[in-house]
Image (cartoon, rainbow, N blue to C red; front, side, top):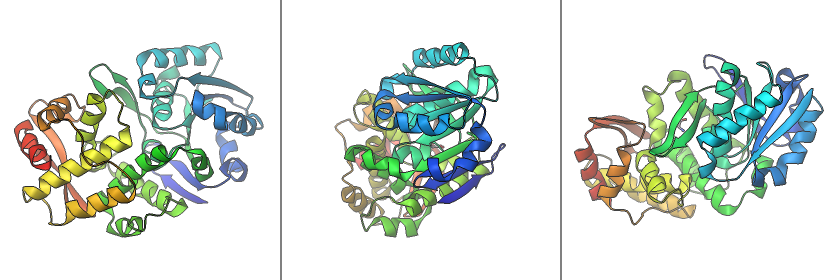
Length: 348
Ligand code: GLY
């Protein structure tokens, strides 16, 4: 088991390994013992893992209640947020009680947002069940719901009290959910870590070492820039165009697949315009193919850039774009939408 402490305003541990509910009882007891717990989960995840998690938490908690919602990105909305808040109130949770999110990125974002605003913030534990949530969304304190105008347009920065990345939970994950998580793992390698990129070339499944390496890379960035004003933006590599693809497809193309497409189009465009080292695009493309990830889409450059104008990272004069200079090294560059369009046209 690996333990990484994230030293944000309130520090917390991210535990990665197997059988964590058994082996990390003492760590969990510090937060959960004698408290009321609300587990938030989608119906699919609940049916697979819910009763087992509830059994373990019930052994320590004063009481456990469960809120389930329909799976899918559409559930990350204000109605579900409102229902969860009412549910927490009806069940009498107090400030020191705990919301436990059990699921992927949608569950962590929605449940995390609810925990951050209920009683102005109650304790939060994430138990991510997807690779994407383990390596990215459960760490760093971003919570959100979607608005009609775009993804994650309302939310908060709210760090959890603990994150349990139990890789045994990944064994029941459908293949496409696993590969979309690999898109985020590849993102870390391209942005920060050439060695990780070399390891991934072997096409191996993400294990404890790979997952905790990604968590540690995220820790470094989040500790430096908790509120996303500087270096944390690097984690957005591929996400500006990725969010456009997600939105244009009405969330029919998953987040990870959209990020893969976003990274590929952007890197191709940057390479064609001489903004990154030759061979970077080919190396990324080979990697995406190894993990059966997509690298193009039917949307035009104009459609992608127009959709990006509603991205929350955008400003009226332009956007902060993450430029891949070479594998293992990216930079943030402020640019106009016209310049972005030039790059995307070159990448299509
Ligand atoms: N998922 C990007 C971030 O946490 O900043």
